[in-house]
Length: 191
Image (tube, rainbow, N blue to C red; front, side):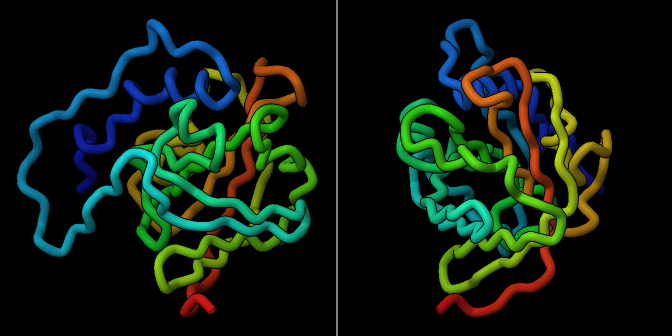
């Protein structure tokens, strides 16, 4: 059964959505650690904030970028950010990634060019995880349904491996978010 305390994404949402588009995060609630039952011995350790967790490649938009843990301004200035508390590459659930569209290195500048069936490749460690783009959404800035273990399915339990790529839209505006959702098709040794 899914422990909602461990996956409560609400404290992160306002800060992450604001940081994604270069807005001030003053007044956004800070994440706080909650006491939880000890994790099983086989559970992977969460990466440290700002550490490199993967590389992402999307051929259609000419993207090759580094993915770092976190969605702070410091991370998003130079990389795609992994939303803390969501699945890591290769884990069941939803791997949520944020990237700027018109500022800094603007890794998701052409995210609107991604089409259903396009490959999204995450290389993490010695493995490559290949996702296929499944859908595109335009949502309000505060819509948190994309953070669910199954994107856009409220209170869902993980039932597969998903990736959600999020940026601001339209270009030059932070009014809405463009979201591309993909499903993992296979994994293979990186190389």
